[in-house]
Image (spheres, helix red, strand yellow):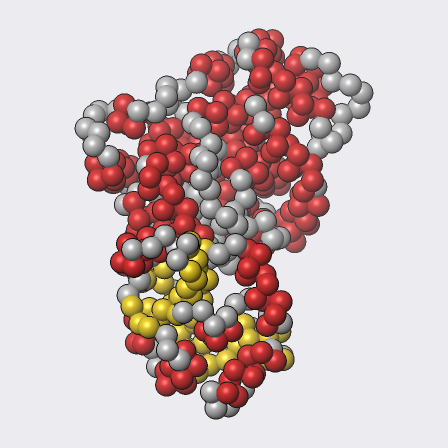
Length: 455
């Protein structure tokens, strides 16, 4: 447990004699974080409580600026110079102008981390003020306790969706969500696949006909089957060959559905830095849901295809947000960037009054998608959700956290309760090994995501 030389020097200069504590030990005060920002007027760093949501949109409005998170390369440079793996809330490390959120002054003891390998320090309010120097105090954060992003009822979701649209658009509220949002209708290919799915007598020939009627989709299916991810023996010469010999009826149906819906809305030009792209997230979550579903006991196992499709569409609400709130989506990107440790639903609820999960679930309902998919998308951030089809959202939540643990950064990390494994009938050690194998195939998964996004 060593303190960085740069941090030690700054503490000595401020006549602060505190000694480092182990990061693994429980924090005995309010944890702080520091965020580096910049725009064409210069640089600025802000310090706030880790437990609060940093409202960058509100701060920019107050300052009349267009600050955003600095490039990751700049962060990396500061960390190298200080010999740290994370940026502690010590303004003098950069020397930039500093703002401190007023909530910080309400705490008696403050925790600064990391200050070295596996180390943190705890300071009194007076010591922190000495260390902060000429930092200015302002209000630019919202306590998470005041932001309720917990799923409630479908009726409440619909009310919030309409309220948010009314607030941010001049459109008149109508009876159907797709009319209100001026979204395109369910794509024809997706319509045909839904009809095929509910037909008990559906056969492979009908699916092949649907896929072949869309030349771009047909090319994608052949590309998937030919990829190293599936290690096909011999050349894949046709859609029929891809379905019959390599991919199978169920997988092709759900990949085609996910791709068709993903194309229904334009990929936004603006995107938050530090987050995986839409199709990479889609493929990772689909593969994760498929792995978990396959490992569950037979009597409790969900339908593999619907679990896979739920993963593929889990972030569809991201596309809906970009379509419904174009000018505000850019602001949302900036707020996601500076609050990456907080779940996106909390940021969206604070900024827009509605979450991507609510929008996606409403739209999927209006499009007549299977109930399992609607429930999975709506409650995927709620691991303790109990209700019809609750296995599907739990699989998405668990899959996301297992991928997060392996460095894929699919969202805010949260500890996995042991009870969740037992509820799903999964062995934690076997599950961990399966996900280690999945992440070991990263190149193939990324290549497959590239195929999805190239159509």
